Length: 374
Ligand SMILES: NC(=O)c1ccc[n+]([C@@H]2O[C@H](COP(=O)([O-])OP(=O)(O)OC[C@H]3O[C@@H](n4cnc5c(N)ncnc54)[C@H](O)[C@@H]3O)[C@@H](O)[C@H]2O)c1
Image 1: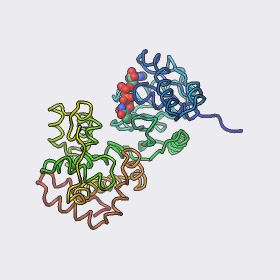
Image 2: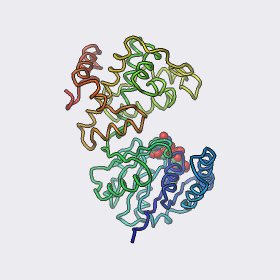
Image 3: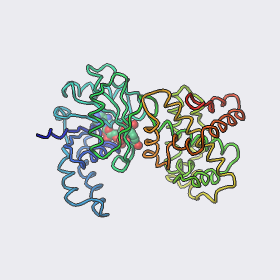
Image 4: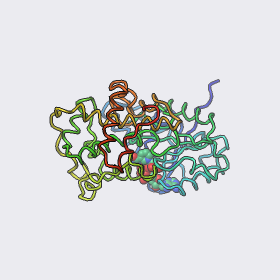
């Protein structure tokens, strides 16, 4: 006899929750979902249907698959209806007290061996688990936006999460067509942390007088689909600044997460990128690659490689995991450990040593080579 299909709960039907619910429903899992805001509940089925209809129109989905996905979705009015769930994922407001309170309520409803997952981007998983009767079943399943299109899910257990729950959450998420990459309960998990130098080193080069066009063109020339400044323009300088400030604060204001004045200046001037009509480059495109494009790209990739080695040294992940996460989460053409293979350890180390020597005193530690690289 085949085991019954696990039942998935999704709480919070905003940008992330609705997409997460669709991912599991489309993969054939029964999904029970709710939101504290009544209109978000009443509109959820229609909103999901709109997304499905758009896929049917473009030939990416059959009418039968659309109907099957919707039939797997149950909108609940109360948390009590989550009792049969095997895995509940919360995608509510990013506030520790709200997430803790929700999980406390769910503990009274769910069997103690059912998994509670958080989609938090910035709150330590161990803090969300703290104070629960059964913290061992708590872990993070960090989806990327939009969850339906992005293949990556960062799976971050806290120190007390039990292996059996990690394994079940991995299996269920992979069955839903995602790639679950194990990562430590550290700020920014893998992608949001290891991406910082991509933007930061571009902003450092900008501050030294390079043009946004030269920097982005250099990265395009070595295979990146978007240069770092165009990527900030796409994400929004305000969103990027908030993420950078969050990482900087979480990492004790270490210079590797320096908040560059050029980014703050963009936000202060309202030049947020595509959404405001003007950014570092937007509406322009990068011009031709400059003569020293390879050096610009090596500088940025050397700092990406270094950050990845710092994270690796902290444990809880692997080089392959980091490479996969960076490729899936950011559409990078290669991960930092693959980039190391291309450049060679000696060239990367020398780049960091030269950057460190040239940096002002307060910024020297930005370029200190990580253990495992030096
Ligand atoms: N937006 C992103 O790009 C992104 C990416 C990865 C992770 N996240 C994380 O996902 C979570 C949700 O983010 P979002 O962008 O979908 O937010 P959102 O504001 O679009 O949606 C949050 C939803 O949760 C509901 N809600 C708030 N408190 C609730 C509660 N106590 N119980 C039930 N529902 C409640 C709100 O009514 C809202 O509909 C956050 O933790 C965020 O950090 C967001």
